[in-house]
Image 1 (cartoon, rainbow, N blue to C red):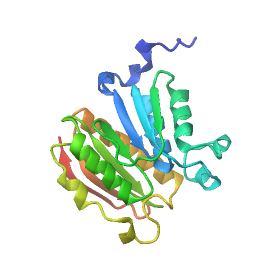
Image 2 (cartoon, helix red, strand yellow):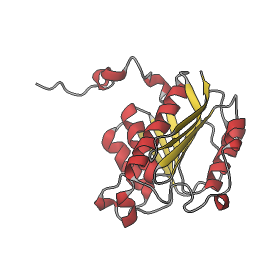
Image 3 (cartoon, rainbow, N blue to C red):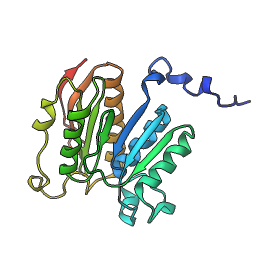
Image 4 (tube, rainbow, N blue to C red):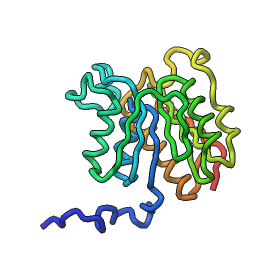
Amino acid sequence: MLQPLTVNTRYLRNKDIINQSQLQSVTVIGCGGIGSAIVQSLAIMGFKEIILYDNDTVEQHNLSTGFFREESLMVKKNVVAKRTIQSYNKNTKVIIYDTYDGQSLSGHTIICVDSMEPRLMAFESFKQYAKDNSVFVDARMDALAYEVITVKPDDFKIYLSKWQPSTNIPDAPCTMKHTIFTAQIVGGMAVNQLFCAISNRGYHKYIWHSLGNHKMKREHFSL
């Protein structure tokens, strides 16, 4: 007979790895391809509060590149993300907003939007308001490659060295052209790096990985 799900057994299989007391609040800016994968993991891990920013609506082209059901068509992505989170973890508090335009970011943040300029805006806000133990993760991808930049307040320099304006990026900026498996991998990697940084494990400040030729670059390993 299956045991009933209780607070004591829900996190039994990872209680020696993930300290639930560290999973308080996290902000996710962008609930599309990468974000739709990220919010599932954050809810399952057990974050107590997830704050969402996204003003887009789920369209048909999103069904093949993000974790959206057909019944989500024409529903705002932040609303879909909230429903997804609460379907995995009804105890998670979810707060939704529309467009991110520079609001204060003092806690853990993951950004995964379609263009570079909001990323820089979010980083500048984090740089100004971040608490000592806060973590900022920027997750990017195209069809067959992804990048993850992880920043803590003791080292902001790495981020600007990995940022460039959208006009400098050829073909499709950031996430406009992508595949579902890339979204799943980079989403998982972003959550992994957030977890490692929060729990003071080793994490990589910069990761670039091509899924087409299997080349991988990692820089600035930190404890």
